[in-house]
Length: 292
Ligand SMILES: C[S@@+](CC[C@H](N)C(=O)[O-])C[C@H]1O[C@@H](n2cnc3c(N)ncnc32)[C@H](O)[C@@H]1O
Image (cartoon, rainbow, N blue to C red; front, side, top):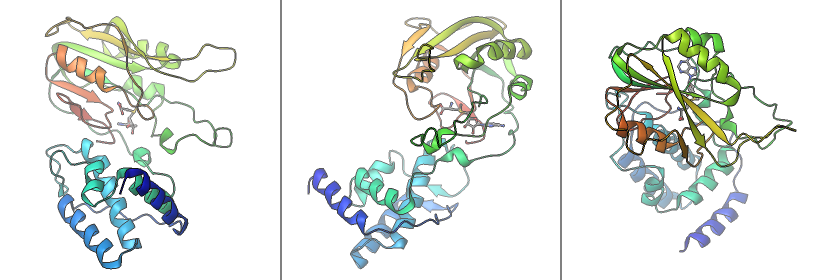
């Protein structure tokens, strides 16, 4: 069956689905292969989509979307083979990702994201770093839904007051440490203040030229974001070849920073590297934040 046929079939099926408001709780222990086997058996046995199937699919998607954030020392008992993700999972159960997403959307409503994670600032890692990327949860104002009904649900995560961010202590660093601080237009002045308070000497600014961007009436469209670069001690890089202040990259989901940025920093900078306020792991970086 072609993908187009599968989608048409799923759309037909979706009409018979009742919205299920209760989402299953996510177990600590979860195993990719066991889950695939279970789903295949359930679908075969019932030849239908039961609540049991939906719950298992929901859990699988949740586990697999959290996968990137799981560190090797994760002890939750989750087992996900390398190279397996939500797309391979759907293929392994015999359907395309688009089709399964339609089922889940119809059953549980809009996809819920990690934005619901809240808590207090975790303790800082103990290592000494030579490269630190900071992407703080600046206190963005949420636009009421009535005005922006199509605003994605993952718009929000827990934010911090500017003062709290400025009071933050950076983890210990080597004598020479490069610091990269992500910031939007609105918080640029506050970001410079962060550097002063953290003892970081400002060097220059990176500009991420991104497609689109919001535009306030009678103001230019904000189609870029910034990374202030500063140093503790002296600036030292492994290489500075093809290392440029201005770069273009696609946008991801809300607030997600481009992979290309992390790849460049990993290529040019010295370890140990730390990604602060991370939501997922990037190669060559240790992660810290509420969601990892
Ligand atoms: C701007 S987002 C980071 C985005 C991330 N760099 C990416 O590319 O996807 C800020 C993150 O800080 C987290 N956060 C909020 N309050 C926090 C706190 N007090 N301590 C640590 N992390 C916090 C949020 O949950 C969110 O994941």
